[in-house]
Image (cartoon, rainbow, N blue to C red; front, side, top):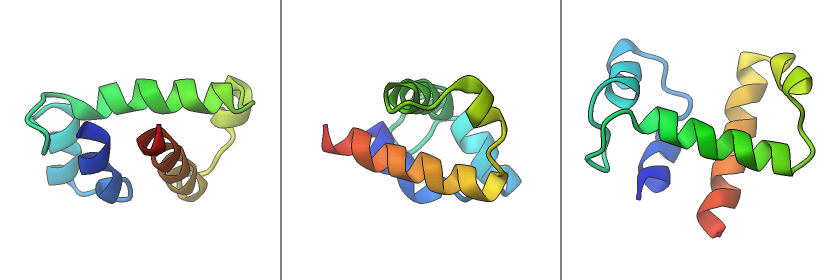
Length: 77
């Protein structure tokens, strides 16, 4: 439920969206949904041969696409 709710908002960068998913209660009714999602996405990326140094060099625009791909994979599981 959390992943399905947050996926359409991956590119959102306005203050309200950031606050909602990082400090507030997201659409699934859970506080700080972005942190939970972040842990899952990083684990998924590491399992798909990404490394922390490689991730550190990804641009913001590329990161949005990369996270969206990861979320799609995770939701299929």
